[in-house]
Image (spheres, one colour):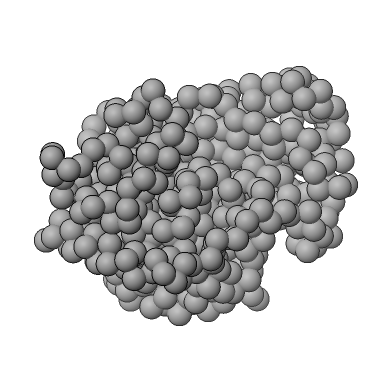
Length: 494
């Protein structure tokens, strides 16, 4: 049998079709070829049309089946990975009521900060493990305050992956992991947080039905099966936010294991087996995919909004004729520390690691007589890595030991500068694997429908490509560059 995985990102839709019998990928791809548009009707706003995700998902699957000559009737399970913290609203007819307020939108920061004080810091950190911040619940509260005519039409709210599952099955549902990323879940009471709903004036009826992450969550609609050319008995049997799913795709399921990704945003995601939190909520804890009432498994998430999007912006505006590989080659000719140029990669909205401050991206230390675009290219990548380091130190304070970081060999991990700087500044070995979010979703779906009897069986075919170890001779000079960058950050935060 085949298992299909969708990865619903803000830049593109990715898909993989996995032969569950031997663990090989028979088809994979992404759509569209240029990055999807993120609309920003006001400063700090970031929106996308959920219907676009669905149309692109259908186009991509049809293209893969045709171009790779894949028998769609063998697809029996579907898994969905999705951009976290987004808000999708539908009425009783399952019509979308407004554009999705996506992960990097910062309009609800003040609403979340007010709720943190009103509900109480002890409750928020002890029960929710986070400040309500700029997460999905706060975004829904923003709609209530600013668009009451929309709020009054709401039947259910969903996360982006819940919406795609609804389009496939006709049923509206979600997971505990998803509710926790929206800051709706009380970990002490093991249920929806009544205090959050009361604070924001959100009816309990808005909450979708809850399914386990790995389970049959709905059968494909017959009409959709016909339209897509897949088996009519196919089921949606897995869904997860992109970062928990990225960790799963790298077989990161146990305490002490760490995954990283560096696409549009950058993330370090580690697993702990005890309830813990950062008192300033600079990193966040959510229910990991294997969390259960009788087993604590939490994902500690460090998110950096401005990662690949910064690289993309630099290329579009300063090097549109160059490929990313050519940019990396230019940057590699510049020494560690970029000869004094520092870049703060915070130009994609409020940053949780900076306590929801939005300081913008900044370039400092430029000398017009010494520096050129190659210095900025290197400094930009170093700035992203140094932000990882800044957050990793917070995670270490929470008791998370980081000796090995696993990642897929894609996006910024294709850059030798990026991955070597990360190894040298964290002291961790970087393990790169041949996988991505869409493959992880396909494996998860195969587990959820019973095609794989265990996680171990699901990852037998996972291929390790490369290991990057810290270089002792470069650690001190990298640490010196980080100290200079950190000084620049501290001045920007004053």
